[in-house]
Length: 297
Ligand code: GLU
Image 1 (cartoon, rainbow, N blue to C red):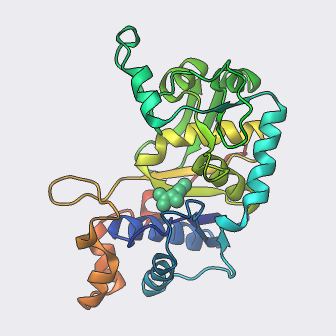
Image 2: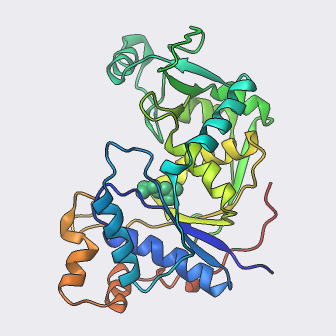
């Protein structure tokens, strides 16, 4: 059995904290235990928010945790052509449309009295579809996926195998869920030309990632990723969503929460075993069970 290819894919928008260490250690441990490979990928398509100093800090922190990875690492900002090609393919399939709505247009449309309470999807409020039939051609407009058409194209169902300990098993999503709870997601932002969802799917595939460990906050996004993989004929990896590391008040850690920054623990003289002890069980990953082998769909 070939070893797993796992990855840790941070965005250099702030300091890594304990939650990132947890994720990276799980990815590392699962790759090591299977005789596989741990990859680091820098997700820096949002150039307005990403900073070279945060990228340098990611490398330092991960090396301090004792991790290594094949070089050179993939940087998503170098991958614009591949992302554009995937977008063009989805557009050629008739599954996309241009959207000129601003955030406040969307808020206003959703607060119309007849709409009721807007559903919240992985990217915020579910888009009300204002531009779906409008036929905009502005080249600087955002590009959205027509979710109903996309789900029809894959036969109305998408599924993935969850290999992590908190939601184990196969998860299936149908058209009603994807249209009602996720909606017409953005595939390319007007300022970026891609989006997290599109870039992550294209790049996981080109790197041959077979297991994606990441926080439980991205579980809902995984249904989107599997749909895009199916539409683009890419292999569907297994996923391992792990619990989120929370602060004493029960809030999940955020990058702005500098108090939990790894660099501070490091400055206080802690070692990687102390970090493993702080984040608790699961950073051994292996104890939680290696994923079963499932054929990619
Ligand atoms: N780049 C994303 C982040 O830093 C992670 C994406 C993923 O693991 O799929 O939150």
